Amino acid sequence: MRVDDFDFVLPEERIALRPVHPRDAARMLCVNPRAAEPFQDRGVRDLVKVLNPGDALVFNDTKVIPAQLTGVRHRGDAAANVSVTLIEPLDASRWKVLARPAKRLRQDDRIAFGNVENVCINGTLWARVESRKEEGGEITLAFDFHGDALDEAIVTLGKMPLPPYISSRRAPDSEDVEDYQTVYARVSGAVAAPTAGLHFTEELLADLREKGIEEHFVTLHVGAGTFLPVKVDDTRDHPMHSERCEMSQATADELNRVRVQGGRVIAVGSTSVRVLESASDDTGRIAGFEGETDIFVTPGYRFKAVDAMLTNFHLPRSTLFMLVSAFCGLETMKQAYAHAIANGYRFYSYGDACFLEPS
Image 1 (spheres, rainbow, N blue to C red):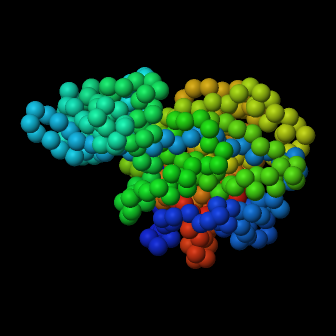
Image 2: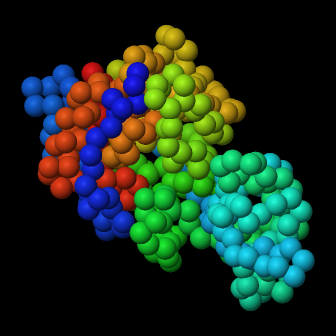
Image 3: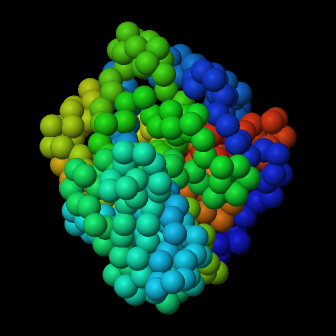
């Protein structure tokens, strides 16, 4: 399909720079292409009414690391300010990163990150530029620390890696440390949040359990690739990024049981969708899965394991808007987004939610 088919105009004021508080006070647009009224304006708290006993919510329990580091590049007597975003660990001391400005770095440069008391040696975490790509700003850094010591230094020195549509308008701060993390996050490794999960509070989760709605967890470490623009004209030419994910066989067995008993498997976020669809066969049976997934879902894809999904509002021309368009139909989602814009819904990572049922 043409990438232009997934374009729409979003007024800048619809982009949320902060979440609502409490989290579950966000609005929720229910989209059901088969209903007489396909769009219903509700709230996230209404999930207790929308879901049925025996349904199962599938959450992504990845935990965002404070992946943005700022430092000073040293080359002989010359120095320059640089910032990097960690995007993928290569081993206990090496990371693939995106650097800005990348043109200031070359192989064997040394970078000193931070200047915080009692952090690393003399308050500084050092790294060496091991290699760099000519295009795209991708660098491999070899840190002087490794293992738990490196992880601790990153947590102390780093800042939360807010998406570019937020970070270009304000700097991350102490509020984002909590706001940009789900309440059930437990497996460190993501450099972006699974944002549909940001709407859940402990109180909402308790209410859902009381109604008989199950909760299950998978892990997908969201990478910086989730924000990469689609630069081609045809979706078939887009090289989809891969992300590390895992679902236990025990969880797969439980989800298969839910469907056999007539319940729905409801993915919380596109990341949970990616895991479930990567782990299922053509009959819809789900199996344990561990590895990389580069699944690219566009209209025409037949969903195998996901019966409904909760997600946020996505960027125009993005792979995430393509995914939801595959689920509900492109024209339905264009109309849904037009409805959301006209009715003041808040978009993107800190914005409102959609509850989607399939076309």
